[in-house]
Image (cartoon, rainbow, N blue to C red; front, side):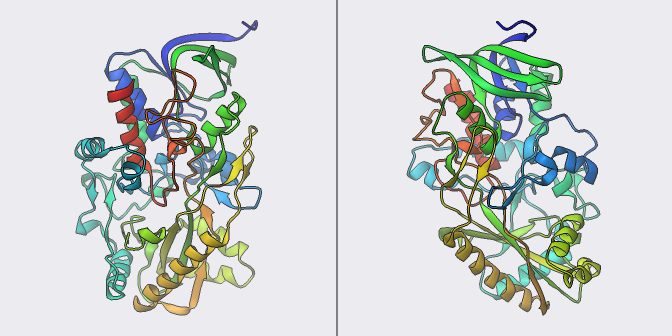
Length: 432
């Protein structure tokens, strides 16, 4: 052992505290097992403010691929669920049909436990209702989406889901982490895991650095849940050369236009939408960027665009999210290459054309239509089931598991949080 290195011991070390890691840690801790959670970020407590938001974001929100595509990744307890919009779509059908992983029991368990359901009518804002009415007239089944939100704690005076829910209405993985700690799991923040340790085909622990220096954790089991990028980086540094070879980012683009009435900024984001085009790899919802991001996008668009900022309160916005192929790569030092190909661009164009039809019918001025730059939503598929993992989420090294978006064997195309929670529950209840 290297002199000066802090040495810890546990039965199970969980790396990352997003939906996968939090679910596993909570399940094992409630079972009475010794669990240590290592989180690279801090436990940021003053959520719901822009300064905190940027402190939580990897590289202060400037995480981009080598090709210039922006991606969102949070380094904080709870991971990106702290600022996700709370959409609770079920696992894609192909997970069972093509890979034999049936999560239905765990989805039902989570839906019942967290009371996942569409928001009641009183929480559907004016902009969301106007878009919904217009979309239905265009022939789409545009309906309220199931949410990780407790409507009894939520109201329309606070549509801040994307910078952190100050009312505690939105479920985040922090709630599972807190329950795990309450059941005597240990949580160490600002602890970056650099490498998995294994010997003779069996995991022995992890090595990393924290605010107090280098550390080694000896463990019987390791569950990597550092996200689609973080898990791939750790495995690549640990000798798994195929980690990060091809992945998805679920590209999205916002199409906006100015209306004569109240816009989308007063609505809870992603209130309603449609999966009618899911077979084509497209889902669409109502959502607008929070005003600082919206203003940044306008300024980047050129000198003529900032004048639209004063009309932000009357701007309606529709998001197109597309399914992208497993292309690109992640290097051991965290560099990301992810080009946008013609397939993804064509899907975003199709979604934008539909969005413009809906916005026109909703009464927007078509001369004000703008398109935000495409970005990546939730990277995944970097350590895929069937390639680097078996169906129990175990690697070729005994005792080394993965439970986050990186395990998904195919591009998802929609929010994966309910899928990841269900995978975590399955891992605890049936595999660990």
